[in-house]
Length: 395
Image (cartoon, rainbow, N blue to C red; front, top):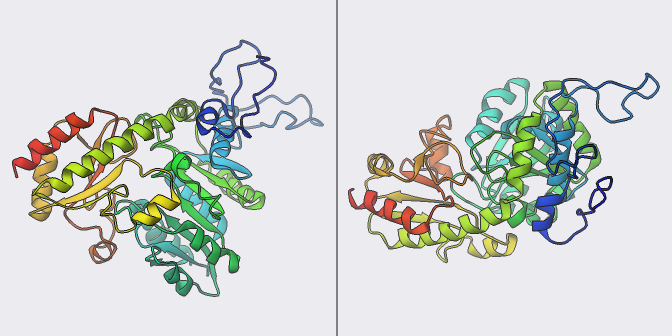
């Protein structure tokens, strides 16, 4: 292959080819197959007249390793371009600061990541931004919540941790009629299983920490935009705040992306086996997984996405105390605040990811005290089930 030319993988239909090759090429000097980590603060310019001819001046504004990852994510999500951030919350914060001004109003899913809820209710309200959290599972609720000063619709689907779904196409249509940007947090399913921009959303957002990187190595975030002006506005905020992704994290994520679809397929298959097991156990209650026939929004889960992911949750009889005993009794599942990694994780959302959310609002959204969230990894499904069974049997 001519190392001076990058393969045109953006137009190739197969996702698995794009996740390996998009955005990168062998190093033109050494032939290195992996994109170098450009660990450089600044970039020497050829002359004042040719300032920025090579595209880079200072790594807060742009970095070649980060650019390679942004190009790959764009090839996977679609859209006009992407921007990468230090964390998923840095991505969310930058989007909201780019789109909202004092006196504006935003509509959000009633079930969102705890950090998103905290950002809205405890930070941005101090600057005169108002929010409505509504049940976006019914698009009519979104339409009814809109005001004359609504400037943003933000949905998370599947939602963390309840897995409630939002009809992306229906909400996007409502947004377009009112000329309001629709941002969709696509972290749980990734562009391999769900493609918000193709369904009409304006921006697809990720915590790249999760399935994209997938190995508990780094934290990061990304957005992919369908509109150039919106992308540039978000990049401007990122540059001002200095919350850009580091080249080392971009390097790790470039490698993790290569196996994202393969990992998701295996993790999703494991999750379905585990969900089926939990439905048969007398101690487990309210088992929720989009791949189960009992899932309340099964038709939407099947039509909107091509897979169901590796996240599920359930409650145990006896409430919070039983849930604590269960999690303390697990040996193979790690009690931790992350998801999407190759290791299987168990999380108590009420005391961990959504601890700052008021109890009344949590309960209304379905985040109950006894909710046990599982992020299923790549271990043997039989081993994972055996570990759950021994812990459940002791309750």
